[in-house]
Structures are given as structure tokens and as C-alpha cells.
Image 1 (cartoon, one colour):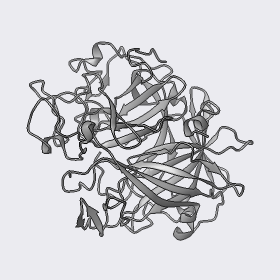
Image 2 (tube, helix red, strand yellow; image 1 turned 180 degrees about the vertical axis):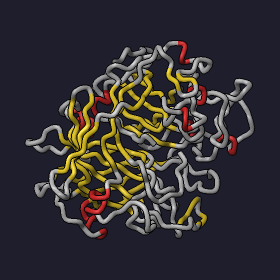
Image 3 (cartoon, one colour; image 1 turned 90 degrees about the horizontal axis):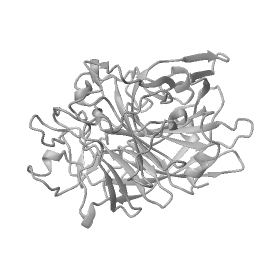
Length: 453
């Protein structure tokens, strides 16, 4: 998932609906034999990746307060407001709110109730060049599970992780709200926005787990069959709308404009999403969630190969991108790209690669590796969430921590799902990484305000 699930930077110069393509301006320089600094240039601004500074994990067999295995929570993360603290010894602490998607579903979806977990952490950044042992590396980011909050639809009905076709027969109403959560934003009032892949929709839940509000995207995104009926299943391609398991993978919020942004993981079906060869252009959406009547004018499944070839957190800018909300492209009959070729009336966002997760030198510093052997020190495969935190370094005021978490798909040989033990065939721990990055375009103080510090 695009993961974020938090966009940085130039990332807040977004339009209501834009399209993203690659136009890389990216450099790597070796300061010495051990340290590599990566820079990316976007809109004339230089961004710096100062590489990994911490690593931590929670073991794959930990049981959370509902009795299920704690897993999959890399789908979406955010910091619990007011918890970020800086210690005198250079360490940082706080609480991460983390969301799994739809439960242990390797062999099919299950009736897994949506939930979010709170995880306490102590971050002790490591800036040395010597390689740490795998055990010592985990001391740089110590994680402690705290609690779990289950989530409910209106009238206190349980939500579910089942594929929509597995919940009910075709009908006009919903007996059960089904969620495959992939993005999250923490609000100042204690509520949370979450983005969903099934719909895709966006929902707001109270701190106690009750549904408060739902947002529906334009018709072009909603999945429909050949007869124009809604077809929310993730088991087959619709005729138009979002691709299966390719809904709102990224979600973030700009507090200065009360604007909520969500990005599809890939192209809609009519935009070429049925094939990797033609799914280059995806869509980004923006909503004014303070006054929803106002339309602001604003400038999947992985493989089995252990050797990851692409694991990154990247940058994009919409400074020159076309805002097409409210145009013919909201209608699924008007694709923005045909056979992978973008409509000539649209200028896409500019994209540059930035943070590379699988740099072998950086992984070795924390006792990790990419590829064989398949052992506990193997880097997890699905990194799906991002969150920013302030460093407060007066010498580098534009530096931030970029925290990212992996979705382990609940894989454990000692798992429990809905009260039933399971053997997933392998133990994949819940890993987290922390990078230090320089983001000059982030408005000073905005990250602190978002975290309530």
C-alpha cells in the first residue's frame, strides 16, 4: 500500500483529484564506506534521506486483548495525540495507534471485526556505522503492546473483514459493514478517519470505536458490474471502478486547510487497472472535511520471492498537476487513461523515489537482510504505513523521523483467529523501521500540531 499512509512535504500541495507518474530526479552519494545519503530534488527543493536509525518488532505469536493474534497492524499507523515525548538522554517515547486490515485471510477472508491497537514505544536512534546484532538492533525501537479497541457500525453492529459477497445476498441495504482498512488519520477530538479498500470509502470512528460518518468517492471509483450494479467483491474485477484490493491505500490530512486526502493503490479498471502493464496512472482525492458542502480548488497481493526488489517511501508534487474533480472524468464512462496512455488534457503529478528500504548496507547496520535465508532477520515483505514525528534538532530544523510498519499478514505458527488456533506455516514478526529524513517543504510546527505537542 502506498502506503500511508502519511504523505510528506510537497505532498500537501495537492489537487482534488490528480494522477501520478514517475519523473525521477534522485541521487545517492557515499560519504564514507559505511554511510550512504540519498537526495531527491522536487520542485527545486532538496530532500535528504539520512537512512535507518531504529528497528523494532513484536513477535508473531503475541495475543491481544480480544484473544486474537496481534498481527497485520502495519496496514495503517498514526501517533496517539499528546503522547510524543523527548527525554534528556536523546530518546523519544509515545504511543502508536495501529490498524490491521481484514484479519488472517491467507485462505480466504474471515469475519474479523475492525479494530485498532495502541502500542507504546521508546525510540533510541542509532547513528553509528558499525553493524549491530539483530538482538541489539531491537533496543533502538522498543515496542510494548497496550490495548485494542473494537469498532462498530451504527446501532452498535459489529463490522467484518469478510469479502462483501461473503456477508449477504444481493440487496439494497447493508446488514454488516465490511472493512479492509489501509489508512488512518488521528484527529484532535480523539476520532479517527480510516480508508477502506473494499468500497472504497472513508469512515470516521469515535475513540470508543463507533461509526460517526462515511464519505463516498466519485462514481468513477465505485466498482460496478456489466449491468451497472455495485460489485464490491475483491475476488474478481469489476467492469469499472477501483481494482480488487486496490482501494484507498493512502490517507493523510492537512490541518491548515481541513483537507483530507486519499489515494488509490493503482488505476481504476477503466483507467487500465486490470493489467500491470497499463495501471500506471492512479487517482488522488481531496475532501474539505470542515465544510463538506464546499469543493476546494487546490493546487495487494505480493509475490513469493524473498528478495524484495522495490520497497520504498517516495515523494510527489501536484504543483503542476491537473485538477479534474467535477469534470467528465468523475463518470466511469470517461477514463483518464486508455491502454496506459494518459488523456492529453491531463498533466500528472511529478514523482521521485526517495527512501529505499532494501539498501543492503543500511539493513546490515540493524542485523537485517533482504533475500535468502528466510529467517527472523529477513526484512518483512509488506511495508504499508508511514507516520512523521519531530526530532527537534536545532542544527537541522527540517529533519523528521519517518516511522514505517510492516503488515505480516498474521503469519504465525502459533496463531489464533476468532478464537480458533491456526498454523500459518511460518513465523513473520511485526517489524517497524525508523528513518531520519530532511523535508524542507514541511511547514514548521505542523507535525508538532498534528501530534498535539
